[in-house]
Image 1 (cartoon, rainbow, N blue to C red):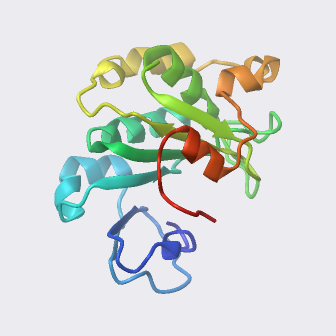
Image 2: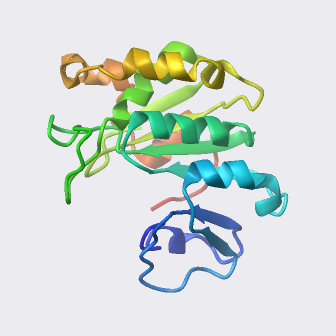
Image 3: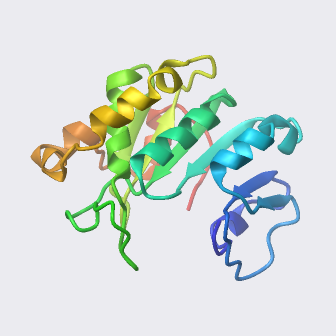
Length: 203
């Protein structure tokens, strides 16, 4: 959303909503795209997403925020309330390749933060979700489906979860990344087929 490079890939007829407090757009956005220049917490506090989407279903959500697991978890909680049975959510920066990339301290160019912590959280507290992580360059993505808009497990335990996972060390991830992240060598198309989500060809 920051530069608009990714969101401009959407079809012109697709209703898109972007949220970024300080975008640096490098070109015009598609005609059916609306950009909210605010933080995500403020957006969900002040807007009702179905109204913003003009009552179209939320098919795809791409979460790529502050590179901290607690904010990504909060964004997921806010978005899950509007999921449909066929929704796909994508978390960015979930497969950091070395400790410096996984630091909570911001780096100028190659930085994923500790977003990967969200995956063991979801596996522990929401085993009903279907997820898999793909080691896509440079910092991976995690696909999530089977959301439950009525679930309050994460929101009701948010403070406890953050306290529990705040000090989870990178060494834990290094011990068995395939198991911890549900890491898969599938292509995106194969992953979507496995998750029974039909978006058609993707690039």
